[in-house]
Image 1 (spheres, helix red, strand yellow):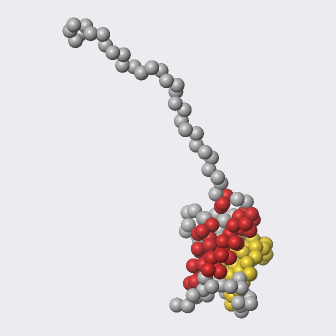
Image 2: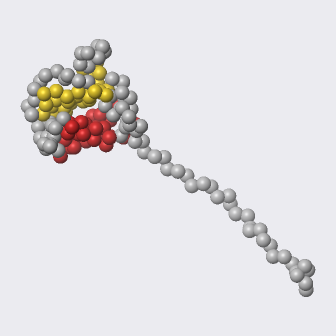
Length: 152
């Protein structure tokens, strides 16, 4: 038999069931997607407490409260804030959340010896994604820049 007259082998594979794409498991929501008060109380405050304790701050009192912003901002409304005090209240910082959202505007103040803060600073304004670790790191870095955590 010549090449042309040989029966051709079947080249098509038998029909198989159509393969379904693997189903993706839904991702667990990020900590930062929790409702604002829940995230602050359950995740942020404990993480900040641990980070500052590891920096040698032993008598840290952290609270989450809705209080007035310092005067001078022209805003006379209550604002959620994380307030940290130590050394028998001699050192205090406040992290303000005017919009009850960790992804929106945040402000920071610090003061010594019970005085009112002299400067209100924007906090983590250039960051694209705000995470728990970044919020903790930002406060530790800011307090370290104040030379409140370690001596330089």
